Amino acid sequence: MPSPRSAGEIFDELKQTKHKIVIDGIECYIVEGDLRLDAGQLLAYAFELAEREQARAGGGSGGEQRQPLVGIVDDEGRMVRWKKGLLLTYNVLRSSFASDADYQTVVQAMRVATADWEATCGVNFKHLSELDGGVTPGGPAPLFQVKAFDDGSGFIAVAFFPDEPPARRTVLIFPSFFSPTLGFDRAGVLRHELGHVLGFRHEHIRSEAPALCPDEPLGNTINLSDYDPRSVMHYFCGGVGTRELQITDVDRDAARKLYGPPDKDVHYFD
Image (cartoon, rainbow, N blue to C red; front, top):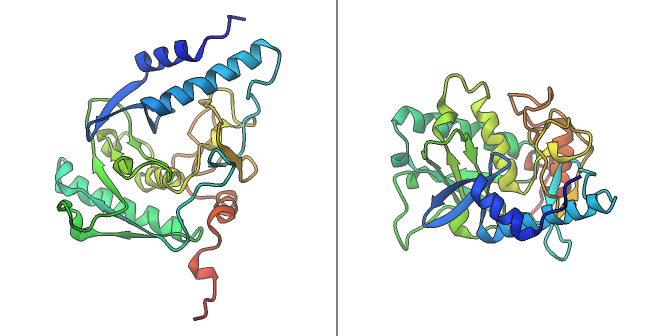
């Protein structure tokens, strides 16, 4: 077994090997296919990887016990989610897309994906279509933005987590999203990305997942469900997962642990 690397060595390697993008002047690195980390987050990621290598070298589990559909917790162990009652507003930046057809495709896919999450748990989205032409400085702004991004890479889409600063709250749509050979349901891709927006990590990081599926550090996470190979948060890897990326019953139960039931399942009184 090779000697464990230091966090600094892993950090330098990640900076050299992970795809780098610049969004609104902020340099970020894409890990695990659809998660973007700034330099500080990448360093924390490297420390987690180094701890696992050290544990493996010492004969420990080193974090090999992956977890089920997981949410994020802060440094005090509190679950991370959007505050109760917050309307999750977004716009789709029309000018960023290569054609109006691409823009309309994303608008429709977002409509389906947001409705599916609203039917799953206690969250509500709203498309501020009046801001699709752009946000005026000092004027009203959405909670997050959806826009096209083309840097020549083969990525499909990239999202963010609830605890990220406002400047980072963007869902990026890459040209591959529109490829006729994509093979994935486009609304499903956005269901997956919105799962990250709501605070859910990948499903394929737990031990029951095939070894061929990507692994990743598990710092600041909490178990929410049993392993589900058909989860909306599971990559299509190792012969499991689906290209439809539907929200399953297991996903629903896990999401309700964090956000409660959807409005349609509650009888409210004034």
